[in-house]
Image: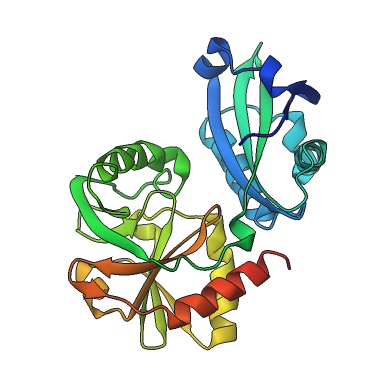
Length: 274
C-alpha cells in the first residue's frame, strides 16, 4: 500500500491527485530506491555516491537538491516520511526527470515490514540463467546498467518455479540475482563475486566487512565464482539494500544450512540502526 502524499519539487500532493504524466515518463533519467528504518537512512552515504555517479555518467547537470553532500535531498526524504507518518520501516522511491532544461524529482514512499521480519524460514530455491550474459563495464556494477538484464531474468523466473535466477558473465562466472548480491560460506570463508567480474554493487555490501569481523569470518571478493562453489558451500544467501538477508535452501540437488546465515541476518539488522 502506497502512502497518501508524494513530494514533487518541494511541494506535497495527494497521490490521488498526482500521477506520473507521459511527459515525466518520457523524460525520466532514473529511479532510486532507498530503505528507511525509524526515519533513518542506513545506506544514505553510499546511495548518494551512486546517485551522483549516475548524473555524471548521464552527462546531466547536478540539481541544486544534490549539492552540499545532498543535504537538501536528505531533508526532503525525511519530510516525506514524516508527512506520511512512516516512523518504522519504509521504502522510498525517487524519480529524477528532465523538465524545462532542468532536473525535477518526485519522491514516493510506502510502508515496509522488513525490519520486523525473521529470516525467511522456508529458504529460496535458485538456478543459473545462461540465456544471456552480462559483461563487465562501469555500468554493470550499477542498477542503471543491470536493470535490462534483471527485467529479462525476472520475467523468466516467474514461469520457472524457481525463487531466484542467477546471472552469469561470459566466463560462466556467477554474478548476482536481480538487485541482490550472493554470498557462499565455505568453512570460515565467505565468498562473493567481485565488481571486476561484472557483478552488481549493492550499497548493502558496506555492512558485510563489519559483520564478518564480528563473527570471525573471512570475506573474499573473487573474480571467478563458478557453479562448483555453490556445490562446495555449506551455506548460501542473498543480500540487498531493500530485502536484507535471504537464506538460500537449495541449488539443484544441493541443500544448505542456515546457522551462520541467521547470525549474519541478526547482525545485519542491528547494523541498520547504527
